[in-house]
Length: 110
Image (cartoon, rainbow, N blue to C red; front, side, top):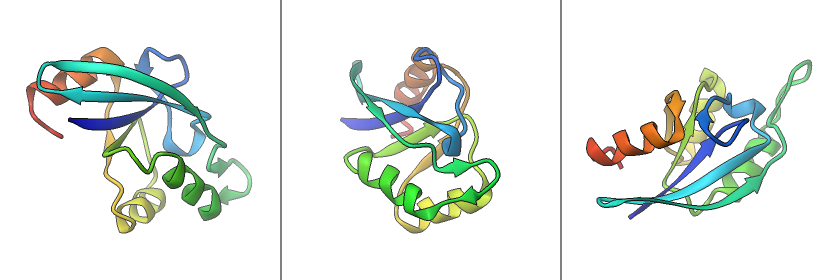
């Protein structure tokens, strides 16, 4: 089993930039399917005019510490490097959450 956090603005599609995500939907996946666990509220890590705030990155890492990976539509190079350096797996994907999770299961990505 793996736990994934999905950055979404509408609850149906992976359509949110990591730094702009105000919440993440959390799912458990296994070979037979997936289950929605909960929504976790976050403070957007990127403040448009102020740039990245690594303190906010750390809060998101802590918020999602039980997740095996984050699924986002987009993430900047600096943010990706920061998360990867802290052993956080991040995947840039897009489409419906259902389709993305089904592909992760079928392709045994996690």
